[in-house]
Amino acid sequence: MDRYPCFPAPETRVLHLQGEGRVRVPTTHCEMTAVVTHLESTASNASKKTTAVAQKAVELLQKAEVKRLQTGVIMVSPKEEYNHKTDKSELRGYTATIEISFRSETEKVAMLLDGLMALGISNIISGSFVADIAVMEQAKKDSLKKAVEDAKTKAELVLTGFGLRALEPNEINVMCAGEISGGGGQHRGGY
Picture: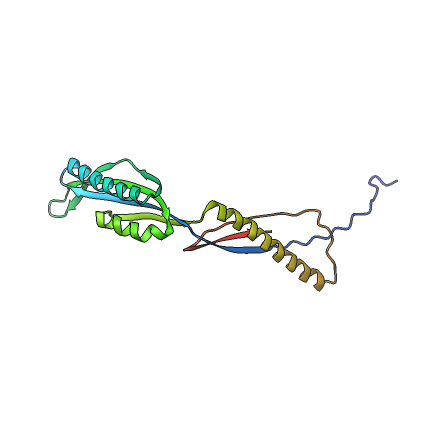
């Protein structure tokens, strides 16, 4: 007598494929961080000059009605230089730095950058273009629809090539990935 009775194995047919859907999304806002930095002979002077420029920058940004306006704490540190003649580090002065971050409509960015640079802003350390949340949510849905259609097309091609027909799937895996790039964003969806 058989210890392990044999049962007919269910017929299993598996088709793995991936569909892709891309949707271009216009960016609506820019998130930026600007840095105000000044080097002066005393820590007090460096701090005062940096704070004065930062205050003017904040006023400019408030007038422009930017969103998420934040200033960081002022950081003051000694600036030293190595003197090759004396073989020692010498105090050159003090550097004071404040970061200012904000979010603005994309159309205003160039004007704001010109205004900040005119005030003496040292540099922009980050800037990213983003899309409105509602637009991104719709892009996710649209890209997923396109990914499903792409997957269906691929499945039909493969099955037809083998002389088979599609049955109801008993398992579906959905993997989504999103990306925003450049001046116009893209959202990608996978199925």
